[in-house]
Image 1 (tube, one colour):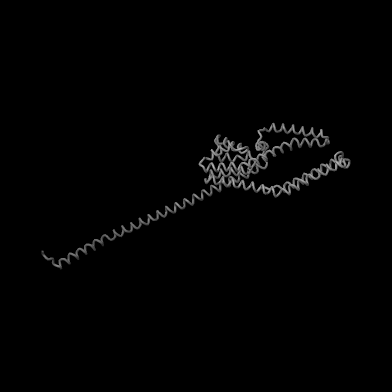
Image 2: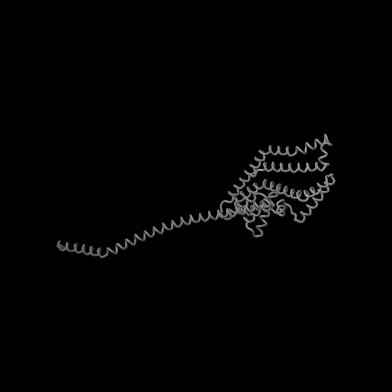
Length: 337
């Protein structure tokens, strides 16, 4: 083999190094630019990822805020509607009172029956020997007071029967929804199997749905025929769930628990106020009992109250003051729960 001169080899190595250094010097800017581009791309990618995460977080916060605002608006709207319903419920028109009493009676027939009651009360006052001045009062009581009192009594009795059965109906709806049935089917079940007046109220909801009304709207109309705050609570729960979503079975279960607790509280208040009620009954009936006993023992002593004008005046004034006292005691014993 031919030997290579070390000087030539050294020159070749130096020439290669020089060429490499020259090439690196010429390509340095290009390589540096490529590295900067890569770093920028990585920075842009990280920024886009962070921006996407921030945007997703903002979207979640905005969605939560929007949902919260919708719930607040719904609650405000429902509160306003409930205030209007409360004003309407305190003094509803006579036609609504008749419907809430569960009677299928027109206004014309009601006035006819009121007129007949007025004539009957006036005739009875004459038959019983009441003074002629008392006959118009008896007719007024029979025509205006007695029919409306009967309507009010029937409204309260119907509302009480509704409250006794309504929590059980809610429990049936809760179990049906938990088992997978739609709420419409649960309402139809209540409308066909529950006792009155719950069955009639839920039947009206089903009929409203068949006419194209939503379940929430039909439930909100229940207080128009049932004078009860609990019926309004049911409509509010259905309305909120339809607008904001959520666990319907849990909401209705909580409502059923609240209604049962309210019922227990009412019973407790009634038990605690029985002593005051008994005292009021005794105080209210004492003048009548004493007058009857005095009449049995000494008729001539008490007859001037009924046979003279001054006595009638005293009886009228006494009746007014007794009515005021009974009204005050009744207001003191009535507690809203």
